[in-house]
Image 1 (cartoon, rainbow, N blue to C red):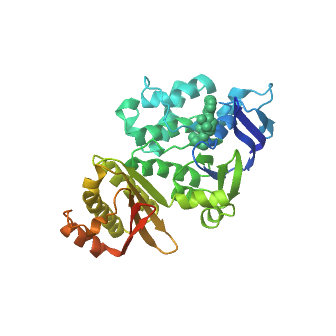
Image 2: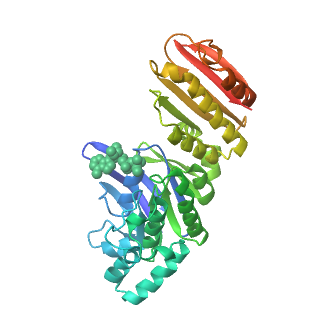
Image 3: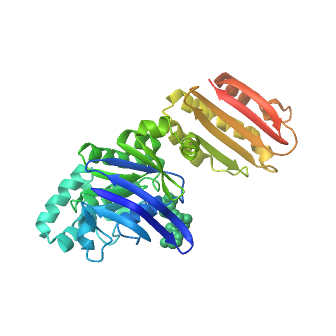
Length: 361
Ligand code: ADP
Ligand code: MG
């Protein structure tokens, strides 16, 4: 359906894509993953002709879309793109957002376009919002409208550019559910995403992008469980941990908790582990609070699938101090809570830094 050969793209001196080759067959769901800045959006934008490639070729159903003679609007209609930031028409209500392009570009009658729009809105669970305006909707609803607007054009393929990354954690799943449903119905899709569990179970193939190329590709099992190349491996391992650099006692505990919950969900940790983890972190940060006035704290939370354990590492600079063993800090009750929920606690002085490692039970 889509064949990309030796695609390159530079912005001035910056080479973003150096030699991208890929083939997408009908009905495939492909996830594109990789560190930010590696050209994932640029690749989608080139395929959708929003950016002009610097070299190489792109064929859609055998047609060279970079050929000057190609009917670009017609090609665009076969492909539609969903953006991170929704890009809805703010001055149009939901149903008008869905009907404007089919009426203007496909020549559909208003009635026909509205009938179809209502069917699609029902599919994405938003029939009730047909006459609302985008700013009356939550982020998750807006993104579902954006997907619906795509579908209204009867695309053969949909390109998603991080469709959930500007959403509140609570709204991610409603959008992913809609995409899952499209996958089940056989829609061909390319999805740039950081939602690794989603990528794993929705896609036939996963492409890891780095160094301006498709650095490694394979089935979800191959890429997530057994990546062959070093950078892929490093990336996959890194997403199993989160890191915080806390520089003041006024850190935002609520945002942190929400992110940690999402992390736990992604790693499919039991609810009890999740609760214990949040409680331990809250107690620990309470203990670190006085120290935060003078020294920053680095906290890394990681999950090892092999050992099925959650590890929390806290590192602070400054004088040697173990917050769990400090008479000056009010630790008694907190310490008991932490002890009851951990399998081991170790304090080390490493490179003039205090490192506390806790393994949860
Ligand atoms: P990703 O989506 O993987 O995070 P992007 O494709 O957005 O990466 O960007 C890749 C690189 O290209 C980045 O370094 C970015 O700053 C640069 N870039 C993207 N678009 C432009 C542009 N229009 N002009 C100049 N540089 C750009
Ligand atoms: Mg991007």
